[in-house]
Amino acid sequence: MDHGRRYTLHLYGPAGLYRGEAPVRLGAKALFILYYLALEGPTRREVLAELLWGHPQALQNLRVELFRLKEALQAPLFSPRQDPLRLPSWIGLDEARRGEALEELERAGGEEWVHEKRAELEKAPQAPPDLLEALEGVGPPFLLVLRGEPGSGRRSLAQALARRLNLPLREGLGREAGVRLLQEPYPEEVDRILQDSRSVYVLLTDLGEDPACLLRLRSRYPPERVRSLLLPPLSFLQARATLLKGLPFLEAARWYLAAGGNPGHLRAGLDSGKEVPQTVRAQVLLLARRLSLPARRALERLSLQKGRIPEPLLEAFEGLPHLAELEEKGFLAYQEGYRFARDRVRRVLMGELPPGMRRHLHEQAVLTLAMSGHAREEAYHRLALGEAQERPLAPPWKEAGRGREVYFLELERAGAWEQEGEGYVLAHLEPHEESLLRLELPPEARFLLLEGEAFREEDPYGLEVSLQGAPPLALEGRFSLAFLASSRPILRFQGQGVAAFTLKAFTEGSRPLKVLTFGTGLEEG
Image 1 (cartoon, rainbow, N blue to C red):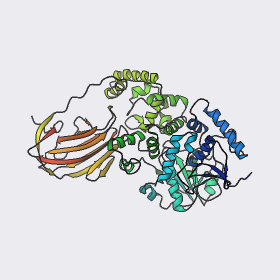
Image 2: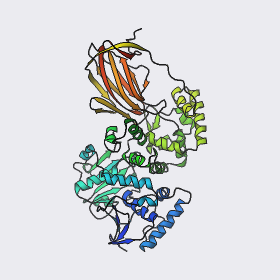
Image 3: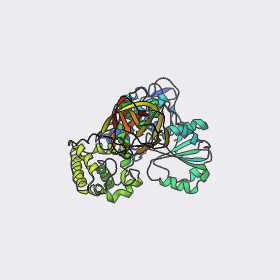
Image 4: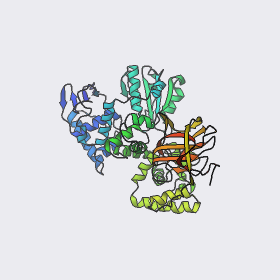
């Protein structure tokens, strides 16, 4: 039976399903299911069950709610074995503004998701200008591939494209023109897409291997009508100008690192007050279930290692046979050794391990790494076990006199730099990241002064700075570091953290200054 579009969900004002002007009596959880499918698209049953109930009987409860929906609407919405669930075409969204977005929907449960969506709708997020520029020339017929993880803003960018083209945003295949979103499960047959000259198809993919649907489309779609865009994380300054606006620097940096710069996850964390909100946890665990069971178990064990994973640990944690699968699915990346592609995903998986097993694996890691001579990695696991760590020796320093400030030149800047006024902002989301600054100082310059504040986790992979290859210094809290500098100093920043600082050069003078002297070739007694 063709229902047309006779039911609508009010996006703004009190949440409810309407047939014409008449409200339809539904339970709170049934209503939540409809809204979730309308705003998120096709969704696995287990995701809905976890969001609404989160206990062993969750799937049975979901089946009961779906039956009640069928009875209330006197029409089948989903086939008994349909998974993922997809909202029927005869239920649509009414976007007329009547009040707050999704009013009272959180009474059903899924509060974190409701708050996240409400914030998105109320703030009407805009796609970054550089990504909007990349959409120039996109118009029917076209295949646009948006790569990114859940929460990265792919749907918002598709909405911006639909507004630009004055076309409706639609889900999946269909006969009407529009900007059509394709996401898992991707269509098996692509002939309808190839024959559709009135639509832009936007295929949402994760950061792993290309789905078979995309490979088939690329082999037959005109290359000049295909474009692929990677949605990067927000920069720290972008996040501070929007979601983190008004927060003190250290608090903003903590939230930014916890979310990995992902706008959706950052919004969910702020709304829930949790660094790992339930929605983010559910998304990561659902992605992990695409792996074979042995690969997933190995990945969970490997999640205890931050940064590069030494080969002896890959072997001890039974990861070696599964490296190809874990890399193809986007969980691991290779860069002078294997590591997690996103440390935030690693932290979620590590949090799923029972405490007893986690401790046992840390102990196993300590033994394995001690025997293979990986001191830094061993120190990380000893710290996780609560063992006191030896503090590094304080760097040598001297009392010197600071004179007048002099100007310097930047010869090279590489890495994750942002400029803020006369200062610098540096945000490393991953433990392996590195940035450098190569300067040229005038002959009279004697000291380089680095002042600012930084946030890092207290482990061997936190943000550090070194000059000319000298031993690194941890950057944490408010800091003021003065270096005895050569004429062409190189500042190297490595490790995970966020810092905002100014950099100044001074001649020698009379005002006292505590100057670090190691590693410069200019040590004085």
